[in-house]
Image (cartoon, rainbow, N blue to C red; front, side, top):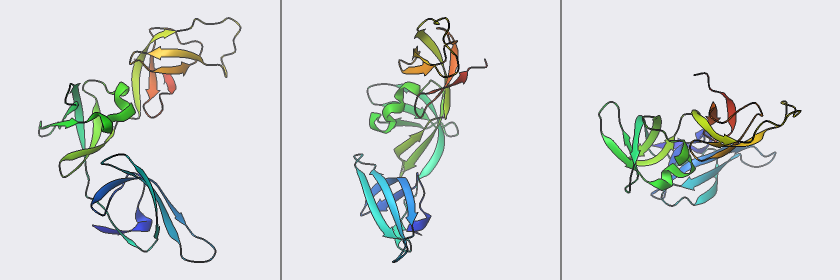
Length: 188
């Protein structure tokens, strides 16, 4: 499906010369003189190479049809990560390079948004927040102010993060999957 370059947004998938690219950033630039352009920073899905392209805002770009469906994470084995479509019970195997650095945040039975193109998985989106347990952290230092000081802690998934001084080992906390940062103490 052909679309005007200026309508592309982050997360759209485009087909350029038979290769699929996911748009990382899309910026419309209107110079004082000359024609307005759309600057696209993209990542090639097949091998992860990043590319920057400029199009006149009125140019047509081929937008690939991508199907976004909710899937449930089952398990990981030598083949990759197994997900199940909760409606049809079809299973999909997603390779490690698509999961990338989100792997530690995958939890059994977690609902994720899986993007496929012609039945092949090309991208995954995890929930914005996950609840994990603190396995180890430094003890509270008396007299430390709670306002701006954070201390290092190890999460149950093996990722290091920074938490406020009052958080102890064994506490369940909410973590952002995007960057692994502490949000709040879990309410459960």
